[in-house]
Length: 567
Image 1 (cartoon, one colour):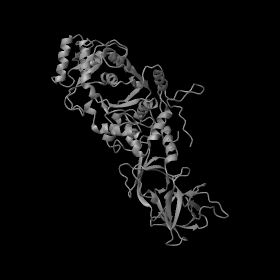
Image 2 (spheres, rainbow, N blue to C red; image 1 turned 90 degrees about the vertical axis):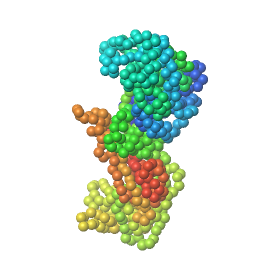
Image 3 (cartoon, rainbow, N blue to C red; image 1 turned 90 degrees about the horizontal axis):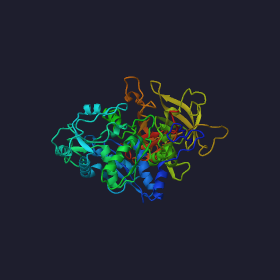
Image 4 (cartoon, rainbow, N blue to C red; image 1 turned 60 degrees about the vertical axis):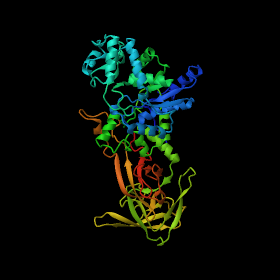
């Protein structure tokens, strides 16, 4: 299997240029440990529970948990739960499930930013007392106007010079629930003329009369991400706070809070490039839109870019971890080709998935010269290279082949079955097509064939048979449903649309084809949910996590045997 090129991947180096380290953070962590700056490292993965994790989160999980694992440290799982209106227990449960599925364990209990709400409130009061925070009454529209732009400095709020006493009183009344949502905010007093927009008196607290999934109705004011993030890191003793590059401009604010407050530690923030994968949407808002508007079945639809979706489609944790290692961790933005992710799962399943045969579009074959009532038990290897044992297929007079493996008028170079032509059945005999039986509409409903009894495990005498096709016995094969999944978007950049269009216009109408009445070899009858197989000549498939059950299997196509999209 050839490995796809990745000229546009973030870690691809130009010809002649020095190779980019697979992970630029490794030498930083090693240097900190060697210098005695830290005795051990503590990282964290801090998702907001407002949706399911997607493939971009997989990179962050692998970076944070992977570094801790590699250097003998620990990684915390902490939910950034500061916006209760958009959060849900379903998302909390799914995130924990996905992290474990990827193969990682967090240190200690699951943590929540809300665990620190009391301390964060007290530190907000400290900032007011030191003259570094004030209550502001500007409306959101006014605040936006006062903030300025990248080319214009901001203006001080008319409420910026309130006394400490007045600010303490107003903040206490905000906490007591005296004001409506959005009526007042608490802001840091930094510099409205700063070229860094994040330092122009950012909001620390907003009023939100919303029930919180962890704290109930205790609070009606909630801290924003920037005020919560660094202080939570400090409370937990995080040594390396690792996030994506869009937070680089937030780092001065991260440090400002830590410098102004009596925190127990001063973590250091590092940023890496986020994972941008073509043919993919990772915006939680847009993923939610796909679900809410019924474009997909659910968050775990196998076409979704969520980890739950990849899992249900049949991707393995190892394939995703290997993919994240393959693309590297650096500070260079770029777009990774979906072919790299598909290479990773093909590479993993080629080694680990047992082989089986499944006929997706069955055509009945009757071998007219095979003795009636006779059944041979043929043994076929479960894997061509790995020692996985054998599976047994009964060979008898009637069997099924795929309808696409017979043509009455085949093109030149056709190596499957044709009138008076021969082909080998995988692991079995050579057969010849003698007659095609048709219905009243002219559709072929059955083939009458003959077999050469002297070709089991050896070539026929005096002639060469090139084609090999898969088959299943008529009796003993199991009826199943097969779902042929493909990429959800037909455009490499789903966001790029005609004027007035949306990403929804790029949905691939052929991203799912459901085939019923398929026939699988007997060994697949007892397939358990998430069992993975290579269906010979068809692709890699997985028994569906939700709908498949022994005796009534449903198989999802994980990926084709080869890249069918090209590049």
